[in-house]
Length: 190
Image (cartoon, rainbow, N blue to C red; front, side, top):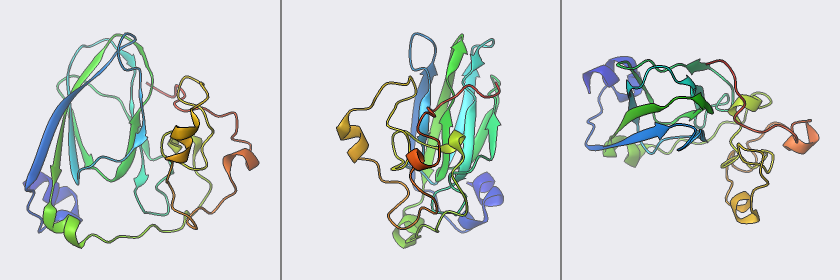
């Protein structure tokens, strides 16, 4: 709690009273990547546990849910075994495709029920065209209808897309902006 309070002013007075933890495993024989999403947490701690020598599988970060830049690229983080990254759960993020080897991480979520009760934040209208690196094939209504492998998604997947809410997009649908052939994730960096 002290670290989250120091790094994120929004949580300076917060009491984190709900916690969850789980492991993630990426390899060519397991999960290859993870589409862009927001965690069901206020604060997420992601700890790289081991397995030096993997390629790809960087953690990509975009904007915070509801902010005008929530679909704009901020940075890619390359995990190093023994290191951790702490971020807001509401920050859009995902895992790029792994190339070789395996990456194993421990993910810890913390939530504050007090903040969640009073958090009635609304989406701001997007400030600019979404960055293709920050488009989610799972959640974005204006993303191409393909998954990360380039496979056409079933119609039920497309009808569950919700982001951004109606009236908050600043641009035309992806097919009208020349993004129809873009698939995510693309291998960018490490």
